[in-house]
Each structure stands twice: as C-alpha cells, then as structure tokens.
Amino acid sequence: MDALVEDPEIRANYNIEIRNRLNELNVEDDTQSAETIYQSIVSSHEAAAKATIPTKRKTKKQPPWENKHVDLPRSVVKQNQATYINKTTRKNKMSLNKALDDLKNTYDNNKKEYIQNKISEIETTHIQKKYKLTWATIREVSNYKMSYTGRPSRNNPTEKN
Image 1 (cartoon, rainbow, N blue to C red):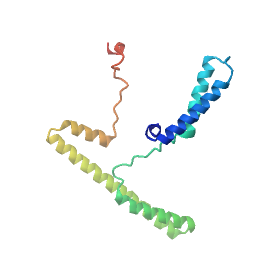
Image 2: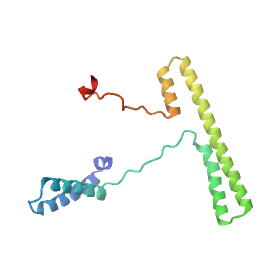
Image 3: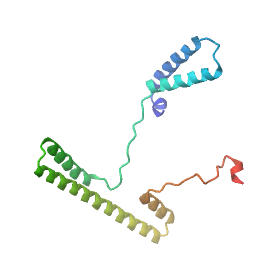
Image 4: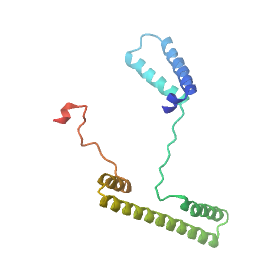
C-alpha cells in the first residue's frame, strides 16, 4: 500500500481500475441484498489492488556474523559445487567437502567473534551502569521479542480493573 501513497501513477491506475469495477456493479439489478453488494465491492477492491499495486518484496534479515568474510568461502563452495555437478569425481567431491568445511569454520569464527564482542559490550555497559543499553544488547543477542498478550489494553477500561 506504500506504493499507492507514494506513486501518483499507481494511484491513478488504481483509481481508474476501481472506478471501472464499481461502475460495473452499478449496472446490475437493484434486487441484490446489501451483503452481496458488499461482497462484490470487497472482491472488486481486491482484484483492482492485485491488478495495479505492486507487491512489496520481503527481505530476509541476515545475521550480523554474515559479513564480507563469508562471501569468499561461499563463492568457492558455489564454484566447487558447479564443478562437482558437471563432473562427479572423487576429487571434486573432496574439494567440495573441504570448501563446505571452510565455510562452516568461517561462520563459526565470525559468530564466535560477534558473541565475544557483544559480551564485552554488555560487561562495559554494566560497569558504566547503563542498564537500559545492557538489556537492549542482551535482547539483541538472544533475539528476544516482547509479548504483549498478557498486558491490558489501555483503550479498554474493563481490562484495567
């Protein structure tokens, strides 16, 4: 929906599409019930949105230890994998396994270094009595997300009592 707000061309195309679809609904007979008219409006909105508004691509967030040091071993694995697929020999299999081991070791070393840096950061912020930053770092490392299911809603006064 961000594209609908930001791009005037997409907005104009959507408006034209929805107007055409709603005009088709007006032509139909007036004996329809309110529920069927509502369902046809909703379905025409969905169809117009699918036809005109581009979908947002989801990006996968990479772990912090996946950095430029991992790119070289990963490219070596891809190269060795391609050669193994083209020519399945024992030598190619061994080189592929060695490249996979190197990639795993690189991942492990980067992850270990990341965790050691975060531990030292937690220790220094605790010594400096910056507890909010300490807990923020702990939540970042542990990938902790707060749950709001047990908290009362501030909009509903019956849940407060």
